Length: 484
Image (cartoon, rainbow, N blue to C red; front, side):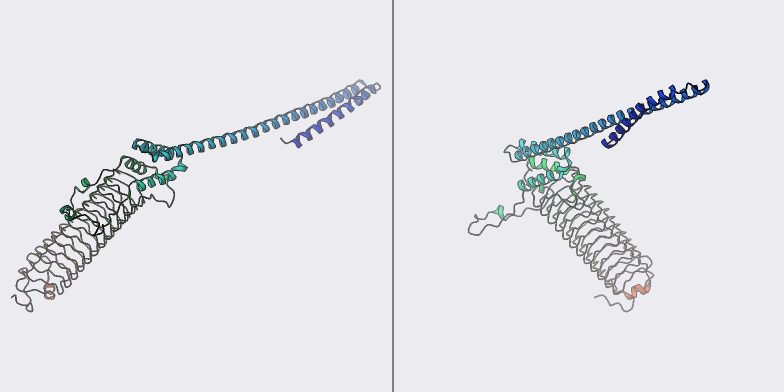
């Protein structure tokens, strides 16, 4: 209650007291002048006088109670204000103490990061991790400190070619070229322990505390053979970094940037590379089995000898990618872009290549047994000596494709377009040719015995000779040139 209301009550109380003081003589005067009245009238006057006096006393009591109640409420209000101010001061003091503690721990840890002893540096890294956990506001700052620590202590060194006059005499070791194999990581140096610890802390951070539109900056670092098992490096910037032989099994690399990075011989089993950028990345002999690479950019990437068994490459961009000798069995390449890709000797058994773009791709000697190539675009593709046993090529486009000596036994070519394709000495035994466009297809030496749904007009539109082996029910067209 405010001071104004309290003063009003006090003034009312004074007024009632004055009225009561004036009323007492009046009551006495009235009682002294009722002598001439009857007893009944005297009793009524006395009762009325007493009632009036009682009401005056009651009003006085109410006013006194209200007055002291107001004073008590005012005192409580003042106490509440004082307590609130005290709490605010306590909160401010606590905040200042926390900020001081954070600053002290920061300064101590950062100073120890440059210590000559590796044990001290490791302790500093763990101390920074604890600060990031205890004080979420400092989380991203600490991540920037740790990534900077890795960049400064594990940079990629580009070997400069020495000048001719400064170079030592040549030796056979300098001129020998070591073949690329699965043991490439054994030749790389072991990663420093403190750098490994920093990477581990970064990889297990609470990514929900990351700043919006900010990425981990791990560009141009050499972290060969690093252990990043199930690490969270979502959207990390790893351009031009060397991760050869690294363990990234089950890692979250969604939308990470590996442009021109080296990942040869690394383990990416079941890693999440959804929409990751692997443009021009080195992935030779890399284990990518069961990896999620849906929508990834692998343009001009080198995947020679890589294992992508059961990997998800749906909608991935593999333009001009090198997949020589790669294993893609049971992989999902539906809708992927493999234009001008090199798939020589690749293993694509039972792979899903539905609606895949393979224009100009080199599939020479590849294995496509039981693969699903329905609706795929194989125009001008090179499929010489390729195995396509029982593959589904329904509605596929193979215009001007080169299938010289390819094996298409039991393949489904219904409604496929083979306009001007080269099927010289190809084996189509038992293939389904229902509605297949064989216009100007070269069938010299091809084996078509046992094919299904082949009609005379299809053969008439094709180009063959007497070396072409046709089903018994189909006659050789008269216009076919004689074999030499």
